[in-house]
Length: 533
Image (cartoon, rainbow, N blue to C red; front, side, top):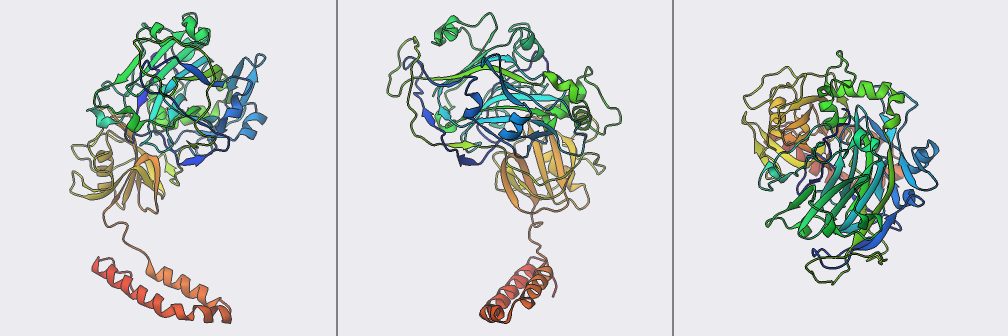
């Protein structure tokens, strides 16, 4: 996918969608700032400043696997600095976050090295002001600037800038689309130069996001049109005008779903979403021999390092303002700059997405039967429809699909095991139906939502892993079989290799083991999964 002028989005996720997740982990030195959430409760005060001189000291460099299947390697701080992916330029006036532009990383191997930053400090409520001079652009790039809570989806997510080269949601009503989040389209003719090459050619701009207990608003100001109060370090939201995004509603209890969020900045390539729409951009080099849009994207990204010289962030500053605790709402605010102490010296922050052990065979194509509910699975991305009703309402339950096959459904989790895909479907349920028609398929993993996603089918599955990203399901009964003969042989082998004294110590356990084994065999036979003698 290439950067386009219309894509800049803020999305709010109350329940798991295809995006992010993380296990909470303490970060030494991180601070938690709980601001006042009452709108117009007082003057906004500067409580955190990510200025270029100390910018990279305030972030954790995530360097684990990307569960959205991007063609990317997130590198640690040492690697990033040695290779100049994380630098400061212009006399400490800006922080630069770039990617590898030297080496080839072909399809089937590791992805292009890049950086994913997660702030040490976390926040509840506030006014977040990003002054960006340049953002990543180019075919196949997937840049993002967003906020994430420590226990996704329960502590929420705000996607402020994200480029996937497709607009995913047209209706932000919380009663539709499975409550999976919504987006706002910044029309390039109404708010010029808000994203990508247009933003870069204009010297960048400012994104301001106000998060209160009642609403989340975002404004974009092109360079040359930034309010004086922001430039002067005393932002006054009453002078900002109509926000680009205003997300609120009487039924939305923001404080119940959004808390303790980190700032995240990253650059991804291709992946389950951006890669799927790569084929829709004829200006990007296409590969007619590639079996899918994702493969065409990965082939280009992997083999053309010099193309990505513009795939970098140049950030002048990120400033976080909050209203003081205990202040009462007034009819308007003026703002001033000050300092504030954090609530505590440590916090819990998400260090990154969960891992998956799936191996993807991108050349695989589904050839089984399709039900009337399924979409085409070869060659093109699906037509967008609403997020399926199966999730999140059926999380951790047994779901019966169109073909009367029963599934154990887990929303935001996956089963380990080799996978075949990607197969394009328009819903999680359609992914289940594909597995029904595929010989030997017992489990699936689905990445997507709001009518466009990728399905990975599995002929075997192992442990259940929460990653917050994948919709996982396994056929009822498929997880019962255990090869007792192998387990018994392994135990006997290990027992015979013990010393005499060790055997004596374990002798008393023998009777208990035999009894447990007999009980298991009886249970297995009752379930019609006879493991044999």
